[in-house]
Length: 139
Image 1 (cartoon, one colour):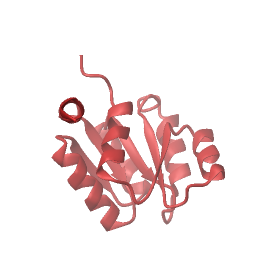
Image 2 (cartoon, helix red, strand yellow):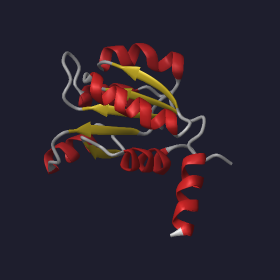
Image 3 (cartoon, rainbow, N blue to C red):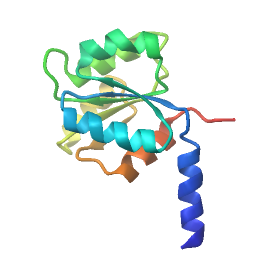
């Protein structure tokens, strides 16, 4: 048990200073993600939809982006595709968020360049594990 706790502490310590953008039209999801990420030492940028995210991404240059699929105006697939088409952010990991755990959604996410797929509601552990897996290594 003791070794497992040490692993978790060091995993969380590695997340310190990582800039994470969370794009979701749900205030509850944005706030939950913000709290979990800030507790782990991440810097958090919140966006309500794709247009809001695209306006903020150049200023903040996040290390990682969580993007909801179902959003008004510009959905998650369109937002992800636009982020990935920008040479400056082509290498930035984009993780799709969805309340559906469907094969079609996962495949469509891959087609627009997403790096992973996380089902909502997510747990603190699953969110932080995903950040740890995709965040740039701190050497």
